[in-house]
Length: 305
Image: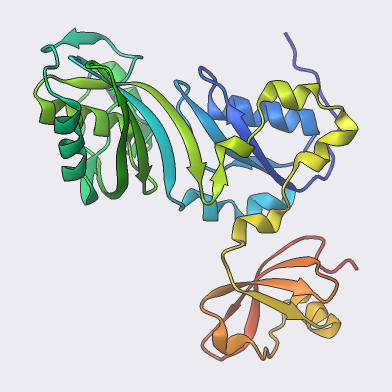
């Protein structure tokens, strides 16, 4: 079936989407983009098809600042099932029984405490990380062994929410790049019975909460003329940066690639948000070694009053 083409339009903002189970992040992104007829769109961190939850979608000018969400910590609710392991670390792979779990909830809590902090984590072979230009899962499907990919991550919080003797619900606050499948496998090894990830739902990232996200069904049911009101402004992605207000003359200079003097520059570290006197968001600026405020990443509409 040939997809219906739409006339692209300029629309800027951030949509907090509740990605459904079984859908790729790219499919969710493209579906949201289609509903907005947006000329440009991008998401801020991939969720596996078997994971659901918070997926911030950037439209238009908001894509210029999406990297700030990619670097942010993430929060998940993970369902870890003990007693068997998976070839992929989750329900997508072949399961093999190891041993029935016999430990208590208190023993599991103690194991979680022991996993906290900075550490080196090995990425699962069934992942999208690249080796010589190809995703690791491509090698895994062909039975080809490649050097393991290891990177530093931080597990900030691991809270046991529920445990029925076989499956644990765990609240996880972690740094970017953390594989929850690997965490589940590590827990299984610690408890001596094996484990795999049976479910995963992202609940928060960069201050955004799943409770504020919309489903695709809700988006589709919203009249087209009312959908723009569901978007957050692009500068919400950089709200943690210091703010500088520019005069009209300074806005004109910045928009022409020129540096300006800033009375606030001494309080600025690296980047800052730039606004006109009428509160329009201009983009980002940065104070360089010369002590001047230079344009860093500006909105295309910045010079339009």
